[in-house]
Length: 118
Image (cartoon, rainbow, N blue to C red; front, side, top):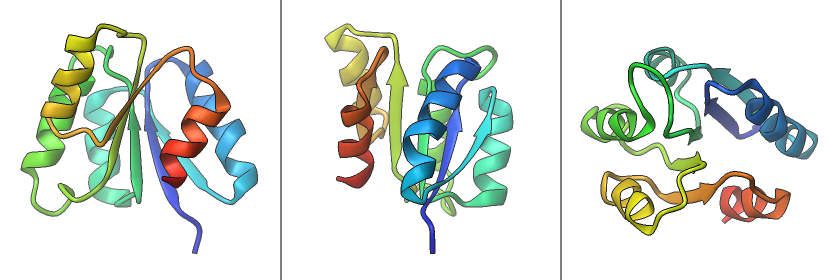
């Protein structure tokens, strides 16, 4: 069975970049363009992994990470934060809230591959 990845990002270019990297390897990629839509997608699709942007309207990636970790039926799903925020404090905050990894944009193909396969 193919691994399902949900990408939640309000920038279509990054969604398409993750699809371009992961789909040829057999991953099934779905997407949501904001945190609210993302939470609904997580609950309905139950992906194997969530790749989540931090900077989004309404519900940002930090808030969504907290919501995921507080929701019993989905709290086990791994979360990778993929963001332009490069400060160490931002990374620490994301990991403290429950993200499993933190990758900064722009990113290299290998960064995503090694983290997803890791």
